[in-house]
Image (cartoon, rainbow, N blue to C red; front, side, top):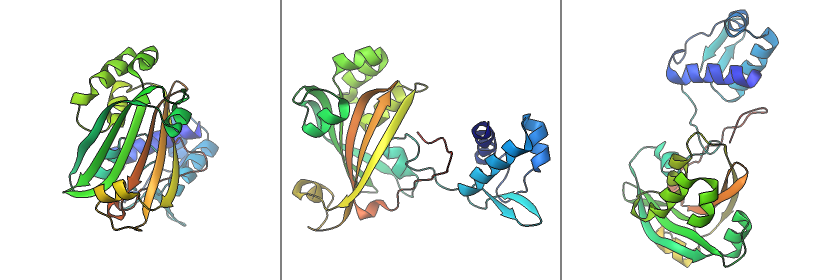
Length: 245
């Protein structure tokens, strides 16, 4: 119940129904309007405050924050959208696209035998010409994806003609489906190829993000993204009982 209340109020804040800096209704008013107990309302409001959507003035009341936090990696979004939250236009330049034999990394992530056929794409994402991220993505083969979603299989089969990342194709094709994702984040330095594509000097620190996506519990997508320092901060908003994907 508290998550439903959280989502209701958060949506009202992000839509502008509760403007930035505006006072919020009282616990009692929320309770009556939403048909839940004051305890549930208070728990939801505490989560909203933890996520920096609202703030409390002691002895005065609760208010919408003066600036909304950025939604970052806690939501399933394409790299284009994630990086677009900062200033500048994002472009995706495809370096490679085609069927590849699954490496150990891909086979483990997708749950397929090593060397089996998968679809792979390598891309460089740039902001106003500056390279931000080297992205390697892989999905199940078109034949395997057909059992998950014929629409997704068709979209992936035609993806060579589709600009952007493979994840953007997946998310458009499976909009409204039961999707879940997981990130593994590590620091390191790029290899020679990634460093060259990102225009980085040897030894420059980078952030590597391994990303997997499941549809109805079935792994369908795995990626490894190497972010240059030029990408800027990647936001992760957390709460004790949040609804992150």
